[in-house]
Amino acid sequence: MNPSWIAVDWGTTNFRAFLMSDGGECLDRIDQAKGLLSVPQAQFPAVFDLLISRWNDSYGDLPVIMAGMVGSQQGWREVPYVQAPASVQDLANNTYSVELLSGHKAKIVSGVSCINQFGNPEVMRGEEIQLIGLNEIIKEDFQAILFGTHSKNAHWINGNIDSYSTVMTGELYSVLVNHSILGKSLPTQEFNKDAFIKGVDIGHQYPLNHVLFSARTFKLFNQVSEHYIHAYISGLLIGHEFFISNWLGKLYLVGSQKLASNYAIALDYLNIDFDVIDGDECFLKGMTKIYNSGENDEY
Image (cartoon, rainbow, N blue to C red):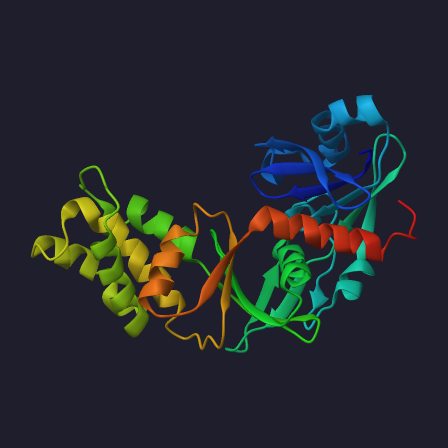
């Protein structure tokens, strides 16, 4: 099976490239901790060429399509957001070209912006590709959580990314356990399901800023073991993601099976029907759809 193009997910901290067949199969991949923050602005062409040099040596210049923060203000070239509701064709029609060292062009896909349920602006770069890929897998409208540092709670309706909201679950967890009084002077932490569920139950019912301090008081009064405080905080934060959500029908979790485990425990406890779909599979199916939708364009 011959390689015919390259899909790239270039984020703030990591670079991932996938060598793709014409039919959308992944033939090889490159993963490097070479995110945007480590690349001087004028050096993107040289860094990219170096990162994929073994493919260039073996296969010559292949069409390249990129997504993620590479299209942000801090990236190779800023690509304006498409406003939701956004279709596959909207995104395929809003790619911007950058010049490679070879003189060939690579394309960067736009992100998607929307106005959330609170009337505030939202932005995503990279997750829109996973949502397109998820639709390719399940072929129907859906609600999904693309969990991670900044979790995206998204709705796909009538062939469009319709709306979404961002919940800073992962980043808040890191800040709280590493830089707040809640994480101070703790022994080695262990995951405990009961402590996690206790957090889910409380976080699901009450405003987060009113219950976070319970991670300290429950420890002081021996209601949560000091070895399980991180698990309890994780439960509070994940439970709170569902505090204002009205999930109708099945919910899809997009990401790795390993990282989905805490969400799965929470959703089981809350009796919410769900399925876990691999994030890389969604990304590659989404990029393939974008690539094929723009296949007559020049790369």
